[in-house]
Length: 204
Image (cartoon, rainbow, N blue to C red; front, side, top):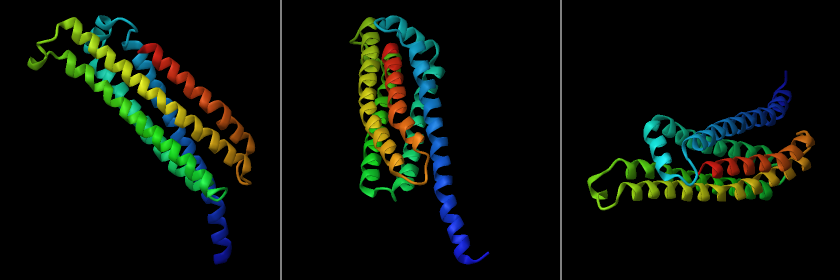
């Protein structure tokens, strides 16, 4: 096999490898974020601060696992974003860069929302400097932080939706990926993210 033929085969295989790797990271994002949403929906009781506090303290390991899953989902989405950018850069570098920008901003917002999940443990452990608050007040504050975190997390859905729409557009314009894939990503992924956000809000 000549060097030119080998180079051509590598060039042809590279987009396929990148696409498969991006698909794996996207799937991991969906699975881990869904698990985090299920955990939140199970432990956080909407409108009942006392029940929420009791659930979190009784199942602390599960709640922390849900928070970790959310962070893993964010990391996987960053990896998928970078792979998709490299994959679709030949179609339109400017549009692909804009899509990556929206995605990374969404990931940053999502990571920020996860920080609010640590607040209930600080508030509910009864530290001495929190003795000026009653137990009910601390429970209410813990639930408030979870609600704020959920609202902050919903902001990332806007950026992820824009990212998916741009990616769908680029795939439709590409000549090396199935166009039906672009339609599926551009239409269905934002809907799934909206559903996940509604599920998360239902818990918090």
